[in-house]
Image 1: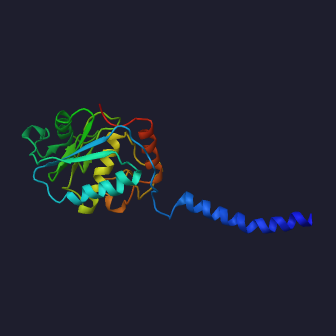
Image 2: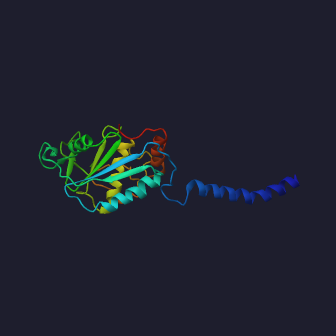
Image 3: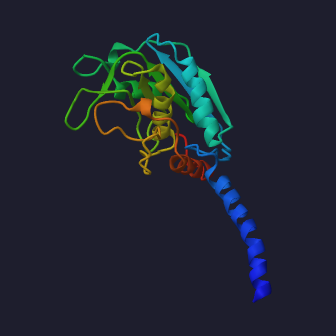
Length: 227
């Protein structure tokens, strides 16, 4: 009994050290999202389509790469910046008050090659139809379940240019990976849904571990992109 007790006393500090180290490995340094190593055999080809002479989006694309694609662990991707184009009159909503987000997505989808994806960025106000409002203003729009090869974002209602990459990442995740709104209800996650008419993008900082893991699993299962 005495020998056993002494051995346990010697092992106890070592056990505590191992537990502490395992905690560091699991939780990282306290950041909201630890990098996940993923391998996508099919390259992700992203087209950035500036619309209506929008400017000041270059830094947002860089942040989208660094804080979203590379943070998840995606390395096999290409981003093409397309020449600016104007939104045609045909994309105006039925009330002719602003551009229809749905019509813009349809337009971009039709000009995007199969296997690629286009993110539209406009400086004009956009809207979509909801159950209670036929002209509901939105920051961006995407169709989940990989229905269209495009999504649309607008800088018109953004509080800060620093929030554009978050909006791009949110809509891209919804359309390209069929990612739902944050199930972990992490208030700092960019996939967190806004429950009122006000945007809270300025309070969001990263793609949380839960959402990043779900996306990584879809990539591993080859469940991404739109044919």
